[in-house]
Length: 258
Length: 254
Image 1: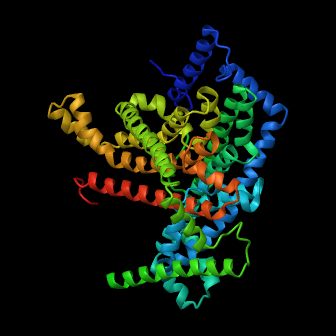
Image 2: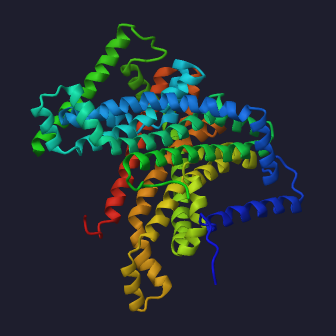
Image 3: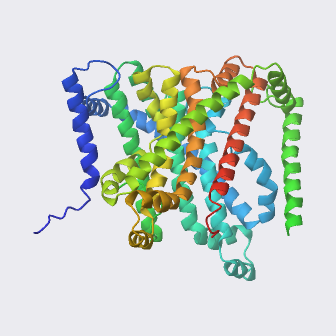
């Protein structure tokens, strides 16, 4: 018997499709007419509606601006700190206590403080995204810089390279794969914090769009946004993974997505 | 080497203290409005005052309760469902891709949905914490089951182990290190979701208390509350790491 070979493993799609059909049937057959959940077909309709009138793309842009700017600032600080503290262990030892004191504070617990400082809007969100996305970048950069072969650093010393030149020509290229993993983790954290802040406080972006849909008793829209948030997060992660494989030709770890 | 390390740790504490002193000086000289950045002395006084008056600890306990019960639900369900999925490669092939889709999803995105279903209730909060913090543990458990060495499976078959015995004495212990690492992540998420939920739903707890201080511009109290969050985050992570080490003592250290 010849088996038809599909380009993907169909089994991963079977369950979600069946679940969607079951949900649709259950809601239709029970005659449910409340505002808590919506039929999958209505959710699809809601998604199309929000996509066509541009509100979904506008919300996506707002979330991505906050997440991206926060990632640039936080990831940038994390990168610089990771390189410096990786090259000079003494500095790492010195900074250990203050860093470990700040790190365990959950970003959402800082919402009231940044609200007082920045008010509502992009900046309070950006500051919290920066605070969160700093850590994966810092830790992985630090580990990667510590892992640069001592011989390479000796060569740099022999060539009498200055600090900037040493970092640019030796350390960063050697540590690049680890730094990239940090970047991917930071990006994931950035999206999560951005949406969370929008749900909890900030009237912007995808998170707020979900809250608003719920308040307007539009569960179809709320679910559509939920799936969209998942899709955007998944897409960004898949894109960075593909880039990572292209750049470094290493098997990706902790790959998300089928 | 060890002595040197200790000296540096001491210096690091001194450095942290210097930062706090600098912050105090900045506030004393009025360089930053105390509404944004209260001097640490006042934040500390607010902390001591609120604890002595008994107006803070009940809220801390409520938040700890939210976090702990939610985490317990998440851990239990995560290991149980993870085991069920992980034990069979076929079930894994059907379910794993769908579960992976949930991994990057912000757990807080469940709030709007859950609020619509359960309303602004304590139960809603627990459902979101339990469900949202579930994924790291569940996925880690599935992964732990998937990495049972084929040789171990052969050995247990040769020994005539029943399927049940195999699961409980080979597969589950094999998955334990990963499951515990997942549970540590779940705890962090449970804390974040507790705070978010308290801010959103008005359930009493430290998250709501902190938000109320901010609304009343009582910044020293606000900073005192945030400081407590740092303590909760630090201690809970330490406790789980300790448990992890205790529970995995049987494992040959790599």
